[in-house]
Amino acid sequence: MGGQATLTPEWLVLVPPYIFSEVFRIPVEILLTILTLGSIGIFFWPMYSVHCLMLAEQAEQHRTLNRIIRHMHALDRSLLQDPTNMPTDDRKKILAEIDSLKELHQRTLKAPTWPFDRNGAIKFASTQVIPIISLLGVTGPFNQVAEIVIKLFQGV
Figure 1: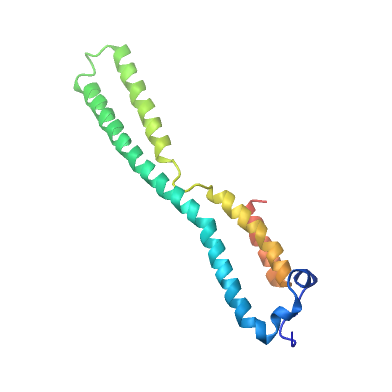
Figure 2: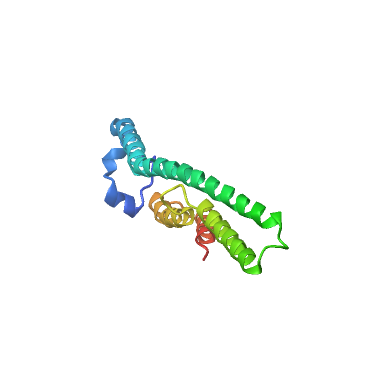
């Protein structure tokens, strides 16, 4: 180890001390970098594929929404052509249909394009920070600030 790193008891359980010798240092760093990048890629690739599918579905929904908007405009025009001579029941029926279509339009616009909830992902990631910080042996003001920030993200 040569006094370069102070290992916490948690690290001593996970990592044998000879890993930090100069002979192993560069190969271990390369291996850890490859494993980290590979695991990130393996984790995000399926989500990205689903995201692409969700974008294609959203494009289809936008085509449907365009038809709904055209229908709403046609209903508006028919309502405004001669509203005084139109029976009240017909006018109420057309207005109810327009309101229903507007609600459908708004709800469809809010459809997500990623396969996870952003707030849920932030909460999950923030719960992982404290154990990682404790494994790294980081203490003091940084640890306290990290805990405060995490609690803010989690809404505690």
